[in-house]
Amino acid sequence: MAVLEILKYPHPMLKKRCQEVDRIDGGVKQLVRDMVETMYRSNGIGMAACQVGIPKRVIVVDVGPIDPEKDLFAMINPEIVSEEGEIEHEEGCLSVPDCSEKVKRKEKILVRGFSPEGEEIEVSGDGILAIALQHELDHLNGVLILDRISRLKREIYRNKLKKEKRKEEGV
Image 1 (cartoon, one colour):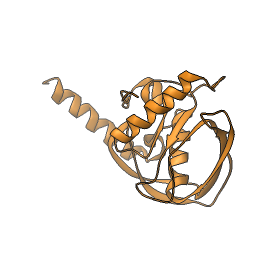
Image 2 (cartoon, helix red, strand yellow):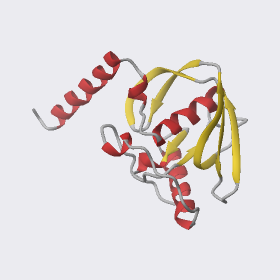
Image 3 (cartoon, one colour):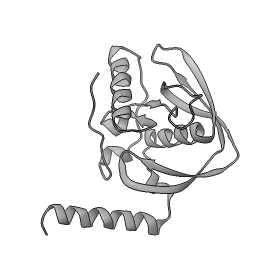
Image 4 (cartoon, rainbow, N blue to C red):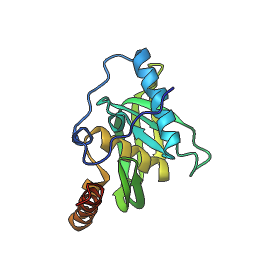
């Protein structure tokens, strides 16, 4: 396993829709293992392949630190099958450091995709699992947490990044 570099906003890959995985092979299985290792090392509860520079529809999720009854899983080519209700919850993102904002999501969702073994699977979630799944699926569609907050908060975050960049460059 390897810890991969996590792309940070405003990297252009984070804004692109990821491609379907045609075939689940050893490379995809290795990607899943590396993503899990990277997610754990970064203290995350979810990760999409595009966050580590691979524009494929692959996610890993482990909300166990928040909901101990849930286990780690990976999903390839996930799609939301059904959703209901609405919830607002504070979210952060490994690709958008130092940004923690309340985001509106569906309260319950059902997602269908494939396991790393190639079996069709469904994951039903509510609470933090539903939020994490929606967050990672957003990544696969080129949507960031910044796209789900107000324009003002988005501009404040962008200005903060510009200020930090100028400071690093000694300007």
